[in-house]
Length: 315
Ligand code: SF4
Image (cartoon, rainbow, N blue to C red):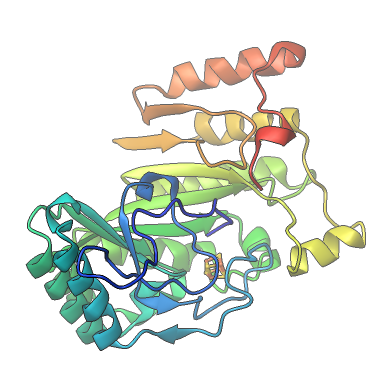
């Protein structure tokens, strides 16, 4: 996973009253763009892995699983507030809630289903490490209990890049753990980190990332732009002059190479994360050639390209 924008919360900590839900949030909250209208519950705090060189999201947090009675009280407070019928999507924060014990997650999902009659989707981030520890039967049980979508930071299909990011798995293992989730009937939303291979490795990073995404066949695929953030090993490397930050045009070339190499059978593609310079969307394979043509036009005439200025990008 890579840095995402701060959450716009649906429910905020408020003075405890019968009519106001009380949700406790610790530290900065992150969620995928598509969870903007979800109720966010911090089932876990931080990230159990917390080592990826580019990721600053949970560095200040000590990983732990929240006590069930606290979460139950928060769910109950939403019900008491009269807002239960409005909750259609729940996102379980923080960085890898899937790593919590399956029995704990199963109980939490049961409470959410019981509390919210119009609940359509429960989702969370899944680090590769959390997918390593969840068995196939556990994933099936969790999907049946309502956890139907996982966000997986693939970042790259290049083993060299994954190693440099300290992702903790190689491409083969990334594909294996993703297949476990798919086999359990869960929808995967994957993220690839543009620029993570640097200038010299850009082409290989793009091609190998496409190969891994092709192998995973996720329901959703998005790209983000790798950006050194304060407090990360990546920033330390950048300050030593060891990181090539690709220009918008180089990133467009990398994205073109990536998209042209995709062979997907029904994946919704987005570059709508705030770190991107170009906001594209489409369904692959249907829109693949059109997206490639857009990028070809950008590459042919960069001065007229609709790049989002740095001032409007949230890094
Ligand atoms: S697994 Fe995800 S949340 Fe955890 S450190 Fe890596 S990118 Fe950040």
